[in-house]
Image (cartoon, rainbow, N blue to C red; front, top):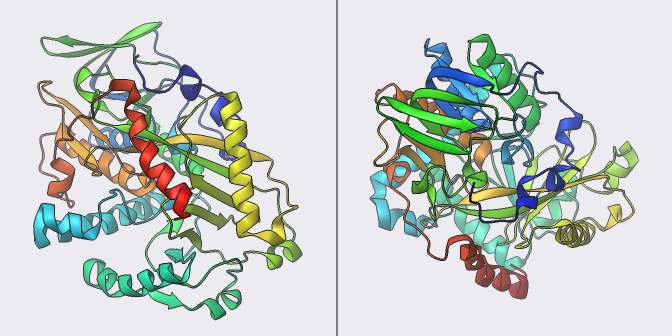
Length: 442
């Protein structure tokens, strides 16, 4: 494997303090690949995208096998903030209209809504109790200027999504249970929070019931092209498949396949979870069940979990090591205490980080891998993989079957991502915007 962060990043260290594995166990039947295994479709990666593709294909009667380097959900899918919300690209509205026109932009907005609906339908269909809560998402203004932007955004959101946002003035926030140093807010009533590990466990169980095979601790070290498909080499065995799906997102390797090199840019996100709060402590701080984030470049995202713990996350971090993790934890904790001063003495026993995935064009990709017949990939969900990563997996299942997807599949997702130069050092491209965000406080 050829990856752009140190090996530490992809090991157990950054995930060691993750809260989600304490709440749900992945089905234990996931053994490693040993010897020779055959399947019609091989999938690399057992996260939201890979498991959604596996479930859809298995339910269609197709032989499918998933190979996961660690455990199910070890990557971003099992360590994110659990926001099933609008998003998936990082383009501004102006840039989206310029690139794809009004019709192309409208198709993308429909897709964002459809991605949330897709996850909601899966939870219902497969009776997955994922601790869902929140009536959409709330965006908080961190400054008066930020609130002015939210006011201006309301009309555009209603036009683009057909959803009517609700503005909350600063003086009304406390009554909404949204105490903190905020200057107002806007609630977009579409989306919900969930426990990502419970969602993943439910997906894995449903896929196995449908006869999908899921192999854990089976890293793919080489993709060998055959006359009639691919051979995926793992330390103790190999999977022979006619078609291939690469669903590794920010945890991808530059050479699996070589086409991936330079087309994705992993970026770090950091999460804290408090101890269980008493009702009195909750009333001191944030008591709303809304999932929320603030209107900054280094956005903070947070939500009060149904079990009474506060989850708090923020973007940032360019170095990855034990020492760097300690420094990032200190920074994240400082931001937590600044935003919620009444909780400054509340312990945060859970802390971890993981990699989200950007692309050079700030767009997700979901489609064929050129020059590899029968091979497909989806990646680049820009921190919104719960909904869009799941949805992309369902689209890939259609493409593998040579079917035109019935669900919305906009031009943006079909656009081949260009390559960034500098190999593993391309993460230095994040330095200028990170410095700007640090200097401006935005």
